[in-house]
Length: 153
Image (cartoon, rainbow, N blue to C red):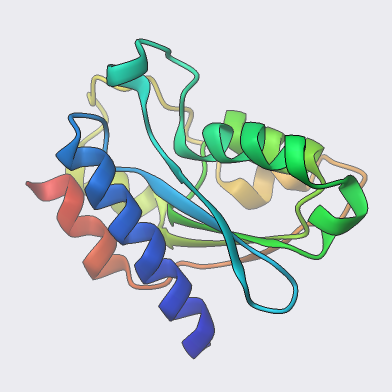
């Protein structure tokens, strides 16, 4: 539990850096099975002018060039916010074995409302993964108060 909080805080810090650079406040990190931080991913939708440049997608693009499927299966992705369906699917196809997230979709919508300019599906990560044939463990939410602050500013 404490390790999850430590890594979620790192993902939140990455999201803060993303926001500082003019992007949306989403971040993630990839942690190996032995607890080593391997990569971080920032949202770069604005600066890259790429609607698919979510933090998780950016991280997975980089990770898939470095690590094979069996290695990724022992890794955990820590995300500042509950991943959207696109990112959840990318996590699934990458082979990553665990997802741990900070801010839940439910709390996110309580903050930004449902008229947020981001087009987001209201499908929880667990619901998306329930349709897959491979088991991906999901834990969260953690540190919701800290994660939510980035969306209130």
